[in-house]
Amino acid sequence: MIFTSTSPDQTKQIAADFSKTLKGGDIVFLEGELGSGKTTFVQGAAKSLGYDGPVRSPTFTIVNIYPTSNRTIKKIVHVDLYRIKDSSELRALALEELAQDTNSITFIEWPNLLGSLLKTNARRIIFGEEGLKRKIIIK
Image 1 (spheres, one colour):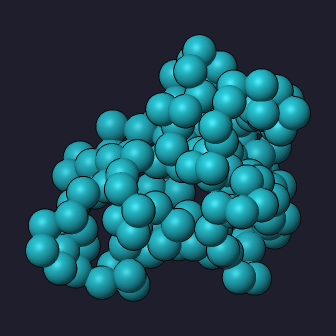
Image 2: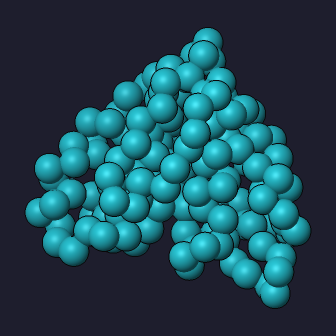
């Protein structure tokens, strides 16, 4: 499915609608350049899944975990691999364990840096820019 967003609020609404298709244990790869809307998308999904606090890019923390009030999805794991330079750093993050939790949803920004780790049936969302608009492709 292809969507066009003209605002952060519209991106969040697309994410909220998408989040209704998720179930515990799902992994979502977020692909796109800096500033293309990946974290804004997670903000919309998190709110839809019952998290009311701020969702910030985990660029420096690498992993942020948000508890939800959802009946079946108890937490959202938001990962940003942009600053990972060596695959040995991935092992220290325990991503495999986090991603196997059937009570959570894991969003991973910059998944191309995973290499062979977590090669799975992850959902893919590709973000692109078209002027002031964002193109969001959900696979």
